[in-house]
Amino acid sequence: MTMIEFVGQLSLGLIMIGATVGSALGIGAVGSAATGAWAKEAKAGKTLNFSYIILIGMPLSQTIYGFILMLVGLAPLVTGDNSVTAKHAGTLLGIGLAGGLAEFFSAWIQGLIGAGACRALSEGEGKGLVFMIIAMGIVETVGLFGFVFLLLVLP
View 1 (cartoon, rainbow, N blue to C red):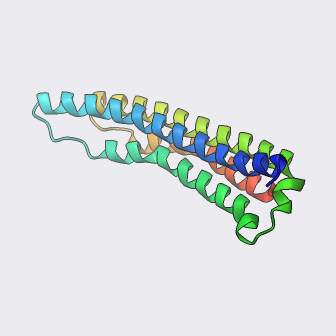
View 2 (tube, rainbow, N blue to C red):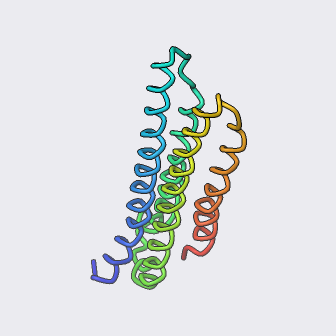
């Protein structure tokens, strides 16, 4: 394996790094806010709000997008066509960086919105969940577009 092939193959791993770290940060942000809201509800003797679980899980989808994009990009290696990574190492590096950053920021910001949504639901007696999911869905679209658009330009 040449150095350029190695760089091409390694570049696709950047997608997973960005996607998984972004998802973990996003889930951590929402999860932290949700546990605080649950503690407040428990202290007040209220039933714990299940809606927070939905919000906690939303930043996970970017990891799935990153995984699929990485697998499709690595498909030529499965068929034994290492020339793709050699000829297109720069393209793959660009796709790896763009994909990793798109999924990272989409998941992380989605988590920050979800954290705010947990606080708002807790203080607003559970009102407005649909609006909060829509807001999180809008930033989800950034990750989805990053996934689809980069999938279309894979060599």
